[in-house]
Length: 241
Image (cartoon, rainbow, N blue to C red; front, side):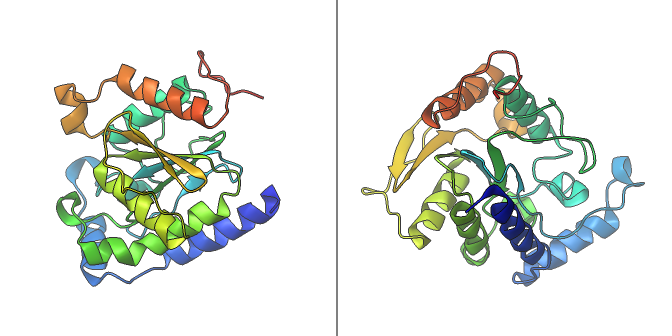
């Protein structure tokens, strides 16, 4: 499939994601958060809907997160955008050469991704960042379809054990099973059919504030992802041609 066709199909998928109301608990929660807001974002019109993936239709690397943050993606409408986790992640993605800028603030901020697509296991913000198994399974077909449509995809980076497991389950739905089922670990790589799955600690504030995940560790993981995907390793944050 050509890039234009992939872009059209991804756009159609994203329209279905945005309209999804499968999980009544998550629908109620995301809409309540968008209505009540928090004081620091009182002037924002929250997105308050499922958050689709975004990025380069020709991506060879996929970032998989857990779910949108209540006052991040659920506010801005873009995954890992408008919260501290995203600040940490996109600064590193820029240093690795995957983006044209080191910040991700809102959907109209000019951010562009190169050889990278960003998605998540769950597309609605869950209370306490804990989707139920049924809520995870309701959302997994969207991730599976993204994987299927990203025809040049070679490497997936699972940010945390939930994302790692979610990618494995989505790949299994496409007929790709890793045997034995690999265990998550930071820096661990596993073959899953035609893909390589790379584990990385999630850039949550709990992990970055305590030093469980440092900027150097995340930079190293993203450089490893570029190498595994057959991309040039960038030193300056300027993407390869």
